[in-house]
Image 1: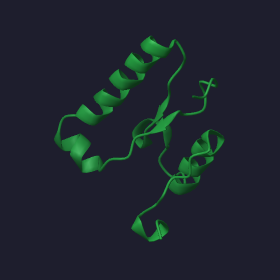
Image 2 (image 1 turned 45 degrees about the vertical axis):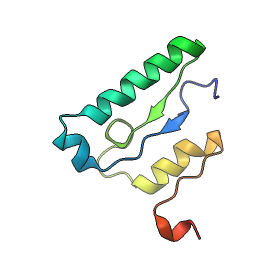
Image 3 (image 1 turned 135 degrees about the vertical axis):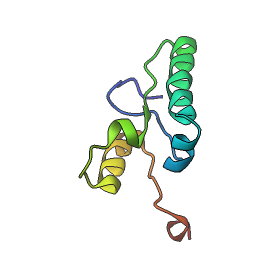
Image 4 (image 1 turned 60 degrees about the horizontal axis):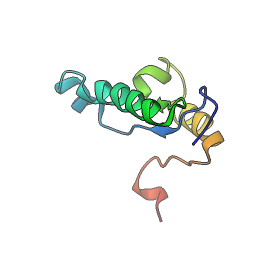
Amino acid sequence: MSKDASNPTAFLSYARFNDQHDGGELSNFSVKLAGKIQTVTRAPFKIFQDRRDIQVGQNWLARIRGRMAPSGARPSTGPEEIA
């Protein structure tokens, strides 16, 4: 687990429509999950979520890869990368 609170420890992948359709339940889940994990571990637990962590006009793939790289995770853009 990352001790650097500025680097995400997890990445939340979801369809934006689902979050909007369900009144932000996935976004709320992200905040609650991070809080519960931090309570148990007593260490910051950052979940990278596009709505909070990618600004309008930013290259989303570069932003995700740049933020997740310190954790050793490599995000996939889709099934074609899983080969």
